[in-house]
Amino acid sequence: MIKRTALGCVFAVLLALLAPPSASAASLVQVTNFGNNPSNLQMHIYVPDRPMSPRPILVAVHYCTGSGPAFFSGTEFARLADQYGFMIVYPTVTRSSKCFDVYTQQALRRNGGSDPVGIRSMVDWAIQNRNGDRNRVYVTGASSGAMMTNVLLGDYPDVFKAGAAFAGVPATCFATTPPNEWNSNCSGGNIIKSAQQWGDAARAMYPGYTGPRPRMQLWHGTNDNTLRYPNYGEEIKQWTNVAGLSQTPSYTDSPQSGWTRTRYGGTGPTAQVEGISIQNGGHDLPRPGMAARAIAFFGLGG
Image 1 (cartoon, helix red, strand yellow):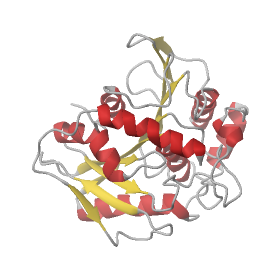
Image 2 (cartoon, rainbow, N blue to C red; image 1 turned 45 degrees about the vertical axis):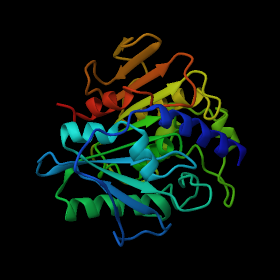
Image 3 (tube, rainbow, N blue to C red; image 1 turned 180 degrees about the horizontal axis):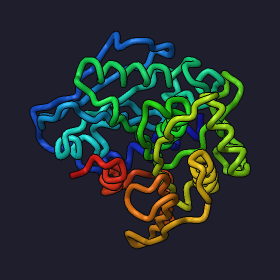
């Protein structure tokens, strides 16, 4: 509980510093009865005024102690939606911790139950009721939401085209025995596996799947004391292996002072896996300007 409370405080301060979405007639709307929802998630949706048909969908997943509306008002994704026309689905956890289920066996397998099933239902609702583009569905999240981003790409590689995880851990890393929701070995960066082992863990979430795999963008601060930095390298191992790629970068640069960006499976902005390491960064991502880079990675900007 201490870890979750500290995590929430970090993000509350960060979000207070970020600019709110730009003025728009569009508003955040709650949706009820959106489909199969075994863990009683809440759903909000933001559909910008800019005409677009069909409209891409971004699922934006909050941190522990947070909510969809807080993630809407405290991050830059809604402003970018106004600019580029994609819609945003914001899930909200209703369990007391306000942390997403990235730890039960139900969550860590396709259609097994819990939060991933409810989020999948939200995507289906947006496709059916708001003219969402099923071929352009993306997911992003911070901390607990970043962990869920990893999980959703494992559970539903046929639904999500790409993800951007801000300060997360590999899919399956946080597995524990309920009612315990916190895995200290994983959060502490102590679970180290081979790329093959991490890749096998992700593939086992949807056994038998042989279709295309989502692209993944990974962000992490080197001084993250909540979900420690070794998790970043483990995520890169996982998603490069899932994609059948070498862990040796195809391209390395520093797009901003203190940032090290590595790309795998390509040298341009649409590489299969992209990692951004933030020197001296803490558990406070995304910082201003980072959301725009995630949207560019998805191909939604411009």
